[in-house]
Length: 549
Ligand code: G6Q
Image 1 (tube, rainbow, N blue to C red):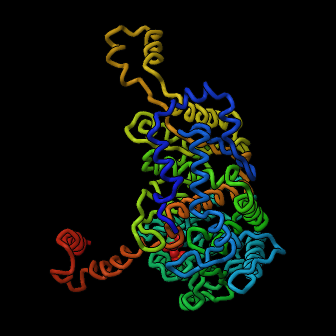
Image 2 (cartoon, rainbow, N blue to C red):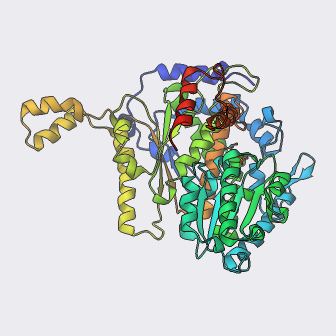
Image 3 (cartoon, rainbow, N blue to C red):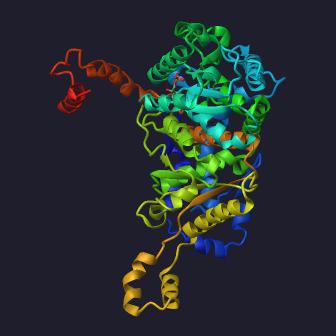
């Protein structure tokens, strides 16, 4: 694959960014059809990208860039089950996880859809049993609380979705997610639960992850200690994994294990059995709707022309901001409390996928790759870091995410949140000129000297780019589509940067070192050899070893 900067469209875009362009404010005045043209919609989601710092010419070049990078072929390769995760020699088929019942999906010589639907049927039956009170605890109590123990891809997706769709849970069990291994997280959850009516889902693709296994052992000790019977594990623990042998070694009957496959990457796995907590919380019908929304976005992504393709457009706008306008970060601002975990989820999706500096062939990338994604729900952000976004020295493109239907929320309150979303996007685009700021201060009766002193502080440069993504409503279908749109956005950017979006070697080194340091922290173990670490690391280990306990 060619280096991004060697592509003709890339070079033309480099030229374009040198042209002085009118401000966004001027462009809106000069072109009344701008917004109508710069919109795309699919699956209950509308993208208004008219507040980006580009025009039709740049957009046409970006679309050409996607074409020159071979995007169409890469999409086909992914959906066709080719081993596009080259460093791990794996196919990337999370898209197959959401194919509707009755479809066939030939990949690698087998029908992966049949395997997917077999696991989905087991998830359906199990979640119905738990929700319906047929699956009970060891002593016969109905399950009231479900604790998912997992981390990274085995935590963030289900946790985000369960929270986002809490209004669709009817009378499902209470959900808890434990990922941190510090002892506080599991302790806080077990204190709130009754062991007689608590079900643990141990979610780990590899079933070797230190944090997850340590928490699972702690949970088992808590449960067996409270119920006084090792046999209780069978009714209170289920596993989600690809590693049956390790599940068995832990003491969970593999009859209570839900499997998935190596072609499902951790951060793309909420659609697999890793989504079991979602099916338990919301019921299997809602889980199917989530999958249907994602599948519908897959179909849109696969078939819509690039110029009207939501994920492709989102990706190209990001490329423009990052590679041609120099944005180092991307703010995600959902204006809905239920979406407050979305930024954390997207952080992993994007930064673990495209936070890379070598290309497929191992040579260095010659451009900036994944920006730093950050954010939380927008209203809180407004009262904190939005200052920097409006008047700081960095360009921070924003994805505003809003929901039109208030759902169960009080309509008046929902409208306030929505008004703030609209106002922030407008303010970032328009800014406030010196003349406007001065007129305001004059109207307020400020003396001349005060106006002169304050003026530079009260000017907003504006011309700051944002997307507005509007969801018709926050329901399983639309959320599934939104997540899939971001997944494909990440994939498209990886194609253009020519990085493998599906491996994560960068998380390995810390894990390796942690295992060694853990042994060395034991005050009863021999101190590490003098040359085992640098002076700083040795000092930290020593501080821990001698700290009075
Ligand atoms: C995701 C990553 C990573 C992974 C966790 C948990 O793409 O690979 O976040 O999901 O490290 O791994 P296990 O599921 O194997 O415990």
